[in-house]
Length: 361
Length: 232
Image (cartoon, rainbow over all chains, first blue to last red; front, side, top):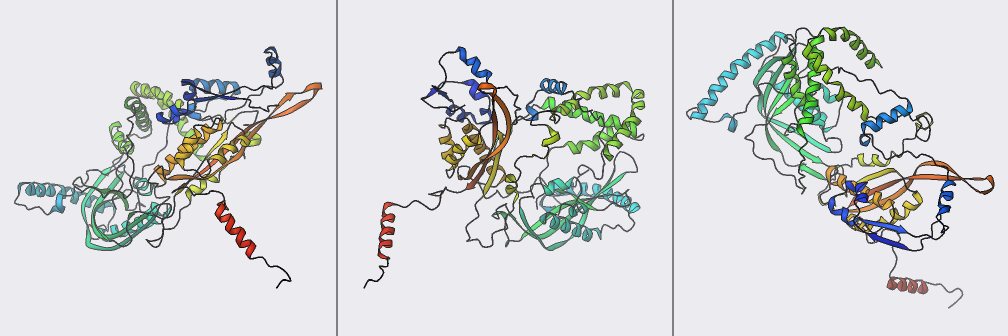
């Protein structure tokens, strides 16, 4: 029936914006010009009289074909509404509340600032004295925090914690390299998990902890309350000076980063967190502190193109986010009595922060 | 199921409290629903009661699923440095294109074994409806290769596999003379593509066609290796 005999094909080249509008918007603009070609076929198997056109059309019983390549996000709101009406479907009921469980904080509170040059500055110089003074001030706060931790965890001592922290550190990293996504949860907090496991799936990571050059020591400790006064989280920053080996291979087993042979000395300030008011809380790796004065990273061996990030229309997005945040605070106010609105916003804010730099290994 | 029940319990608990909450918080709460309903509207309708999309009898038809799984294989690291680095590859597909698989085959076979740039250039001049889909699929795959699969240069790719699968077919009717009827098939097709890193091979199809010189040599060889039975 539809045997087309191509008698002659004629290429009509013209500026056709409607052709370019539908599927070609995806293509880059340079290629659009090249595609402005339309095909016209003059077949001669049909009767020449136009009045038979209607009769020919009537031979086919029209059925409605669904558009299988339609994406849900392309359908407009009104369109969706009319379709649901047509099928007699009620719109799904909106859930006003969202349950959430806080088992870790969303960031580091009062982060430790590693001294430049690893604190080797002379006390006699002005900046050196300032550094020392700040240190003393912070040290007293750390001591208070350690005392608070000891109230919940009796055998906690800042001297022995370094060894324990190193075990957690090694376990977390070996599990990451082995892609053990369930086992790693024991050693890594929920905030840290996506940072460590992001992009790990299609890579092969060879990581080895060779030795500790200096014994790890606790440099900083803080305790904070979340929502209620009894709900306490402790964060301890540990300084590691270690020797490690790292080699990252891509999906095809080609070396992407690092080396199997070269060992590197690594100086790190790692934050560990524990939900101390929870009886079954564990010390887990929470974050790494990357100082500003760190020298720039070694660039990747391959060349790549930097894409300009498109700045999204901020005001509209922001208003939506604020609304949900307000909702959260509102619903919390209804359930928790002790809590004030300002506290929740501070506790939620770190979650909504943008992506942070992944920990430098 | 458990989750839903819990949420509902919370809801019933909260409704009386909502009325007593301060006016400002009520206003905030009222301001929220549009944002939520917007999200809800985005989800698709799975409840087409008739036709090919009916979930009642067609729910196990997921379409092709294995092809993209090849993108997840992780190859072991290469042992020695002097070994040639393994070539990267990306599998990509476009499903349910409203075009006949029979017609799409010509385009798929045409593009096979070409370098990506060459294929994109050539497809501009293929005056068939499916050529646009093939073109777009190639461009998508190229972008994927560079962004996710550690391919350094986007032009250094060639089309290692390109083939067509049959998609959903909707059956229709047409009238014939004398009260008879015929069947019309409205076909859809899937297009599958694998890009590989490197230069395209000289000859995609094996065995390679021989040059006249080679043919002559082969003929000579054949002639000389003859065994003439019961001769000297």
